[in-house]
Length: 493
Image (cartoon, rainbow, N blue to C red):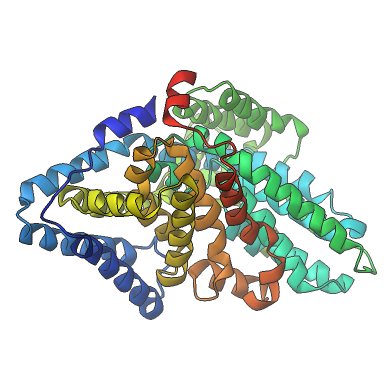
């Protein structure tokens, strides 16, 4: 019912005096400023400057509104309504940060990585790479962390085995972005439903319809590619496994916590309740399985009630790092807690300011009408969404903005077509999140290319999951397959 409340609260206002070019001018100004900012300032979008650019874009929209007789108080009121509509998403983001912290110090995430690495087999190295990176990325919610840690190790193993580093990088990124899309710990997985007006777990469940077939095809292709290479030597992960084992008490019992959270999600428990219970169970598991880690995080010499309290609160709220004898793992075994989510929350608030003013001046209504007149079919609307996301990835050079801007601009068009908001959130992820790594000057493309030491041109062809995802969502739209209508959703509820 949360998305119905969002629809009720978000009233896109009309302004008959505003023409399409005036409505689009703030968008063009925003994209231009964002592109310039990324190329010149080199920002990663979450550190602040792009958030300010969103506010400048809002200022441009406000000026257009004033020239079209829209009162400033009306704009501020709509901004307030927009920010209010994201309250649930912001609270979920904070809970996701706290859960990530307790799951780290409890050894849940390290245990997932430990057992994930053990499925590595030289005979199916590429397919195993996809699986390993998928598991780790789902556990951490970060494609960047997966690439910078296990990804680097897998590239080194590939070089030792004589396997193409381009193929390996493509397999790494395919798995990493599968996890980035599907993990409730991921920034983009929280951002997309917040922009579209649906809830996190409805979004994740709906994404499985396109994402699971896509990753299945990707794994099959890499299995076939595996027969074209002849690896020599052995894939030795014993040093990494030993480092994990020395830092944490690894136990399969720790899987009970994520399994329980998954069960709660499947049972449609409120996301906030599921994440809170996951956090508390992670904290309990930390005290049972990792008392030494809790003591180290607390800064105390011996475990006591005060040390346990400080250690757990640190993991929930602020940056937490677990040091091992392996430098690669040290980057992986870190969490920002609730503090680490503030950058994404900051981005959402600034995006809501821009979107609120665009609402108030009537720009969104004008653009939505133009889109509906231009695209008379469901497929046309999906195609325009995919095109917009990819274009913003190439111009604004950031995946977050490729989700935020189209998400806000297309929300009313989807509702006017009678489409449930999860159609939009899924399209945003299928095109905005995953294609960012295919563009060399995008922050994601530049980052992964630099970390893995593999040019985008070398892995582009092999990043199968990333470029297949937009085609999969368009395929579903073309055949009207698994496209949920608002009427269908209301009946189900």
